[in-house]
Length: 145
Image (cartoon, rainbow, N blue to C red; front, side):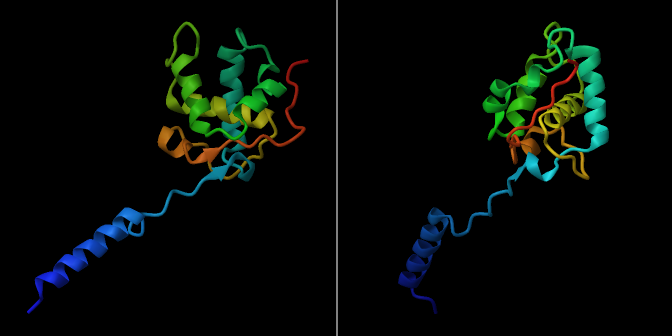
């Protein structure tokens, strides 16, 4: 027969382990844009979206400046995606599909020198939170000069 003191001790140990994080699930793996988080085809679609919709207010080259690169370097991709999808296009914020916004972000990554990969950049905020923007030093291609 199990002694009640043993049950209390066992419960306390389990509580202590849970409080210390010993039984929590491991954190989701964080990746960076330096590992290739979008495809060339996706960036191509994003470029089309940019040239058809965005360039009227945001001239080519706007998003390859040192200010842009410093602002976003180290941020989760979800923040850039969220800003764009909640505020653009200016006259109709949120009017594009999540995939179109993701394509546009892929294009911005491309013109800032981030390498392509084998999988498309997701269009879900939860997945984008695990991807950090890493701007390669000295990159950023001038577009349309």
